[in-house]
Image (cartoon, rainbow, N blue to C red; front, side, top):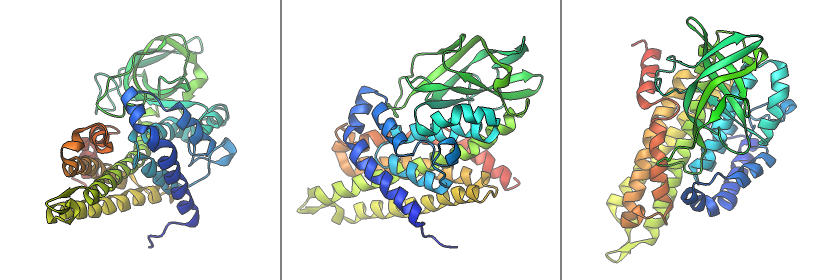
Length: 377
C-alpha cells in the first residue's frame, strides 16, 4: 500500500487546479449570482479532455483511471461546486450508463460528442413520488409498432435543459415488475423540459423537471437487456457517489483554504485571529477530517479501477464527505464572522452549495441503509 499519486495523476491535478484558479474562480460568483450556466467553461473543459476522462480514447475519452477523475472533480469543487457537479453528473450519471450498458452502435453514436463536451447527457431516475425510493418508478414505457411510448415525469435532473443537452437516459416500467433504461434524445415529440428550479445553491448548474406525454422513441433505444434497469441504475449510482464524494472533499478543502487565508489576515486584539487557540482548533480539526475523507474517497475510486467491489466504500465516502462539507462551510462562515454572511466572500456560496451533498445522489439516510446492509445488519 502506498499513498503517492502517479506522475500522470499529479499532472492532471495541477492541470485542473490551474484551470480552476485561472478560468473558474474569476467568474464563479458572477455565474452564481446570475444563475447562468458556464457554457464557456464547459467548452474549455472539453478541449482539455476533462469531460470524458475515464472513457476509452477510441470513443473520444481521456483513457484515465477513476482516481484521476475523482481528483479532477475535487479540484474543480475547491473553487466552484456548480462547475464540478456539471462535470460529475455528465460523466458519472449521463455518460457512464451508455458506455457500460449500451450496444457498440449506441456507444459510437453518443460517446464521441459526450466525451468531448460538445453535448451533455442526463440520467433520469428520481420522480415526484419516488424520492429516495429509487425502485418506485411510475414512468411507463410500452412497445407499440416498434417504438417505446413513454409517459411519466422525472425531477431534479441535472444537465437536462442547456443548449448543449443531448438527451436523457430514463428509468421506466416496461412490464409488470420490470424496470428498463431507455435513451430519449432532446427534441423528441412528447419530451418536455420544464422550467428550471429556483435552488438554494448550485445556481450555475442546470436542473429541471422532465415530462413525458406519449413520447415515442425507437425500440432500439433500450439500454442493455430489457428488465435490467434496476440493476443498471444501482451500479450507476455507486459510481456516481465517488464523484459526489470528491465534490464534497473539494468543497471542504476550498472552505478551509478560504478560512485559513482570512484568519491570517483578519486582526483582532492586536494579532491575526489565526493565533487564537479556538480558531486554530477549528482549522486543525477540519484539516484532519478532510484528509481522512479524501483517503476514503480515493480508496473507493481505486477499488473501482481494480474492478473490486466498491459499493460499501463509495457509500461511506459519500456519507462522510457530505457531512464534512456542510461542517467545513459552516466553520468557514463562522471564522469569517459577519463577512461570512456576505455574498462578496466565497464561503457564503460554499455554505449554500454544501447542503445538497447530504441529499443528492442518495440521502445520508440511504447511505446508512447501504452501509448497514453491507455490514449484515
